[in-house]
Amino acid sequence: MVKPLLRNNIDTDAGGFLTSLRSALGMTLTTVLLAGCTLGPDFISPPPPDTQNYGSGAAPTLPQIPGEPTQHLVQNQPIATEWWKIFGSPALDQLIHEALAGSPTLQAAQGTLLQSQHALAEVRGDYFPQVDFAAGAQRQRGPAFALGLLPPNNPQPPLFNLYSIGPLVSYSPDVFGLTSRLVEQQEALTEVAGYQWAVAQLSLTGNAVTGAFILASTRRQIDILQEIIRTDEHSLTLIQDQFRFGKIPLHQLLTAQVQLAHDRTLLPTLTQQYSAMANAIAVLAGKLPGTWTAPAFDLTEFSLPTELPVSLPSAWVRQRPDIRAAEAQLHASSAAIGVATAQMYPSFPLTASIDTAALSATSLFQQSSLIWSLAGGLTMPIFHGGALTAHKQAAVDAFQATLAIYRQTVLQAFSQVTNTLQALEYDGQRLAAERLALDSANEALRLQKLSVTAGKSDALSLLDSERNAHQARLDYTQAQTQRYLDSAELFIAMGGGWNDLNLCGYCSKQAVLPTQTHAKETDPTTQGENQ
Image (cartoon, rainbow, N blue to C red; front, top):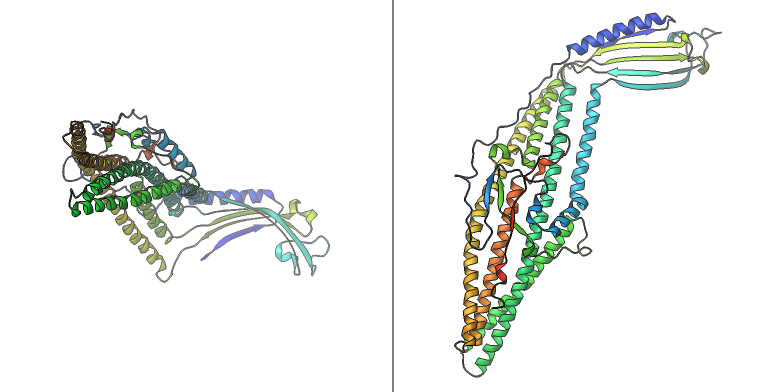
């Protein structure tokens, strides 16, 4: 440690103080002008995935299904911030509005963002001189002239009071970029908090949308299953009558009993699934389960989007908030290397003070009581037992670990998009098959009713056809729901429109969005019920 140059003046000549002050300011200005050497690596964003497609080939072509809304992929179409409104359900819009307002998870993420923003303002304060005000009063014994103070009567009283008051200015020029790297690191961490807030919002809205679909689907499946059970009960009654008169063997009766028992076991499972999802949606909305009732969603109230957005991978990495958060964390790790590097170089603290000191409070503001000081210092690390080198290497290792996390985040997100696109293709194929099965079952039921009316078939055959139609409705509902779920999943996998939000001053501005088109879906599951 080199001791700072300290100059004290007790002269009453103010001109001497001003001359020294100008000299000190000149020294400070020279030091600041020498600043600008920012040590450490400058961060460069990782390149996007070197591919134009998701998966091994071009984007899949979604099948066209007779009687169903047609979906197709649209390249580089912006996603609206409130992307869930494309499903056309006011009840869903209200649910998400309540969830965004009441979710503790989102509030926690927002609090973390605000905390990080204030931490950034705190670090930026190191760019400027620190000005403080000090005042003191003490009683001591000793020679007053050692302090440069001459009492009016006795030049060396054994006991006296000392009063002082005045400002103190301190400043550390950012010669080697320590402050700049600290600010850069905190800016990156603030971006991390902002992107994580976007991740929390995307997760919240995505879970609310998929939860609404599952709730509506489960509710319909419960209704269909109850109709199947009623059909089973009616069939069992007829079979019991036939068995009583010896018209059918015992194994047919047992088969009917097993079928009814099996279908009854499915009802508690579906009911529990509905209850669990309703409770989960209550938690998403920030409500206590049991004190808040989820909307009674129905699949018929949702519109299936006909246009599904797909961005090129080069643009997609900028749309995913989780990838942006990982990139910002990587930026913070890069800045940390610069911080560790700058800490291995000297620092140059500067201080200045102007005080008045006197033996009595009434004499504090006399011209003869003026005391000023200017100090410049140098602190340079010489030997720290290898700690500084180890600290820098640890920062480098942390950067490599964060880079691996970033790559893993990109890989997982890329896989999510690829799987969702493939799922949409398979959803169409499955729905086409289930729609054909449903139409066939409804037609078979219609013909069976005509046969019974003409006296060519019995009631038991009609009940079998009804059961087959109900089962086809159940299978179709599951396939229909999966198409809704995967459509929503694609919006989530593409980033969910978060980049339209002004999160923390580092994100993109509002974009002008085109109007999405969507189609109201017909409900073929109701066909054949009243035929």
